[in-house]
Length: 440
Image (cartoon, rainbow, N blue to C red; front, top):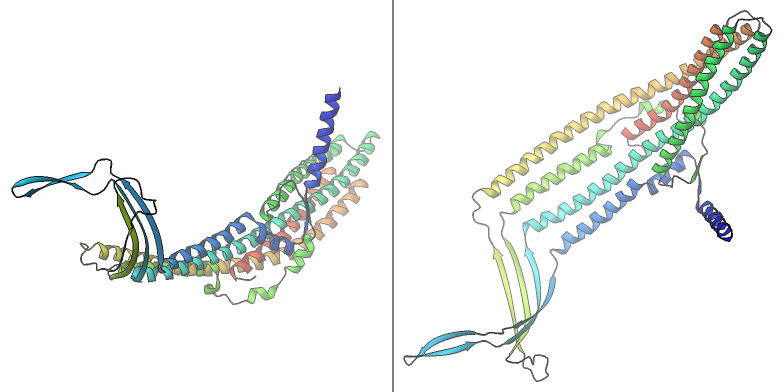
């Protein structure tokens, strides 16, 4: 019994600790975008890519700076090499070297000229630019995705409220109809028709509630927060829609070169140009210098660390020149391949520019159409509400059948969803247009 009480106590304490660790978040759309750009997993890795590119740039720079290396070596010859020489016609055997040999030295090397190194410095800078542009692209794509996901959560919330309202109205109508049927004033078909409609609404409500949870978790994932944490959205779908109605945006001038995809394409062209320069630079000579200073010692016994052991100092300085003479046209072949890759990159950049122009025209048209659809859906919703209200009155007065009422209700439900979707489309299509226009 005591063990059971102890187990229950431990479980209760664990539950309380888990609740304490659970966090709560509340975001407007703007706040959600800002939080995602800082905490989304892809955004975090994009920052790391920039840091890695900075380290790569310094690694390349350091190759042309002085390099200092030290070395210590010890060798034990357990059997010495012997040699025979003739001395007065008599062969004499000589022992070569000592049993114990030790050498220590320090070297300073400096690259004086290498065409590949100079190109490498430029490539490292371009690589950093590519990483920075990739981060910008990640942020812009993340903004659009967060807008879509935030809107999906709001859509699910609004759909849930509307379906619950429809369900409550339909349940009351069904109850009243059942009472009238019990009194024998209408046919059973009227009751059954309403029951079918109610079943459809219940099914839609259950599905929306499931989708709402999924949409909220997807938004949490984008925001970089734990799926178990609480998330509240402070913006409303209708308010966001009104704030995103901006006809002036349709008159913005499109400049493909300001788009991040074009800039990344330009980075790729630059990298291919540097690759071509690198292959050409391999035909240039390279020059380097080295300074060595060291000391060695030899002994028949292992007395190397004795204070009386004699060490022999030495030093030298050297200059090395490497001149490529003939590679059986291998360098020329690699240079031609790099030239072809450069032409391909330029062609891809032209294609990217044309694609961006096409995307702009489509995004502009989609946004303009979403605004038109919003106005149309709002008008249709008002009409559907009036029609459904009239059918409710006629049905209660016995002037219309449940079939007519159900048809009016289905038309209303469809108009409600179309109106909600039109609001979401205005928000999403504007986000797409702002992305292509390079708006922050």
